[in-house]
Length: 95
Image (cartoon, rainbow, N blue to C red):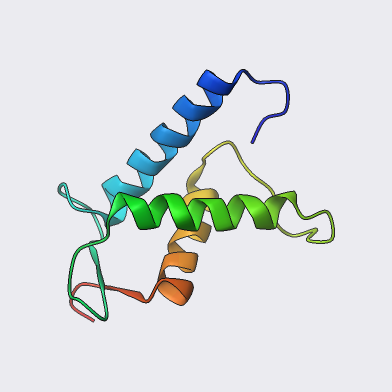
């Protein structure tokens, strides 16, 4: 995330980002609800944290020039969404 930022601030930033992703695709009144293709359960925060970790790992790979962390902006949210769809086997409700 941001080098030189205290760990409590990084934790807060990560928590806020997960809440932001959850508000779009998760459980509490999401704009675009997602559910597991396998279980039919709604998107959970554990998987959002996992997909976010995958995304941050991609962004920290210096050979990946097209992935940059935008401090939790909408592009970051959409990229985490794509990881959830492709790697965590989620789909939008109604598909």
